[in-house]
Length: 246
Image (cartoon, rainbow, N blue to C red; front, side, top):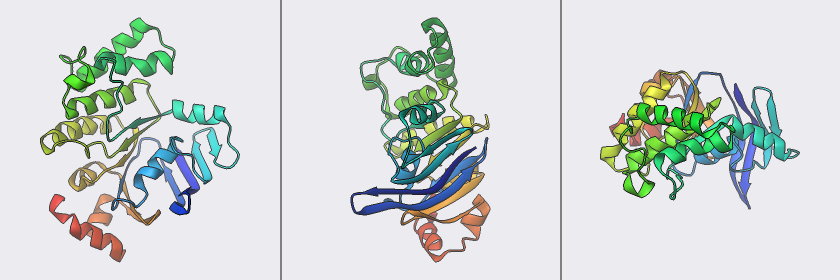
């Protein structure tokens, strides 16, 4: 289980997160939707301390990190059990696809190179890149780069995988290939928290949907509750605007 308790985040005078409280159960698929600027990506980055919250706690099983009195060791422990898939892939440009996936295994998990290579090859095969392992990022399409990034995230066997708008930087024709890979990850029932603008995808794969607005969780529920019977007027307005994608 991962939990955010009374989570706040400000950038100067701009308060982006305003007291987020949410629990995500082990194996649960939670999708976060909302307009740009509503705090979705900031929340995701606070969950593994890529952004340090201004106030509040992040709890992951027996790891507890308090924003106002945390220690570096706690943050490292939290990051070891979480993995992020970024909008812009964040691959090492000077490393091949295989080397990118191996990096976390050798550096974070301290696995020997032979074992790390074997596991990385298996993961790249799973995401459909058996013939692209020795390619560098600039030789791969955006969709292929994101699939490498997903393989890299899965390699360290994290307890939680965080997806930050994983298709937003892709050409429309590449979106489907990445969503299909994420759907395969969903089948493993790993704990996933996904920020996305892909409403049909959210509706298909989520156990629970959180609607962010103005730095708070304005509404949450099952896909059916959110998409068919939204209770808040703001949620209704948002879904009407994006209804063409559902």
